[in-house]
Length: 193
Image 1 (cartoon, rainbow, N blue to C red):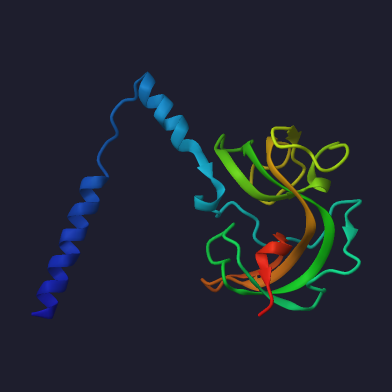
Image 2: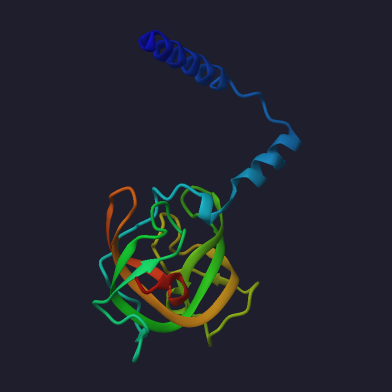
């Protein structure tokens, strides 16, 4: 009986998925507006397969090491961040701590044309000729960061700015992926274990 029920559920799921995969209707002017809105993605819900979770550990020129960070290099903390799937509520080892201004930015990918909303985080030293920090929300900048494919040299708009200590961390995500030298986690996204 169990095998029949499982077989029935499998077939029902297959038919449901097949029905959802039909041909798309041609777009009209209004449909194109809706498509453009759908392409504007909040960073927290997007597919991060193009994000470089790990990095070489190199930091931008002029980035100052924190003199007395809350979480010193070598210490561990629990992350409370959702930049990527599997990042929230996992242990991280601090591999770098830096005093800077951190920004959430919105930009259009130079490779895919996808609009990325509220990407967290880019630091002041990853902007092209930024001038004095902090920059105000609404300021247009050019990114010099490669956290995600299509980010480097993209024009972006500052959504928020915060002067804080940022951390580079190593961690194993909830899905088992080992991540080395992840850039960046803010101090407020970390907690003592």
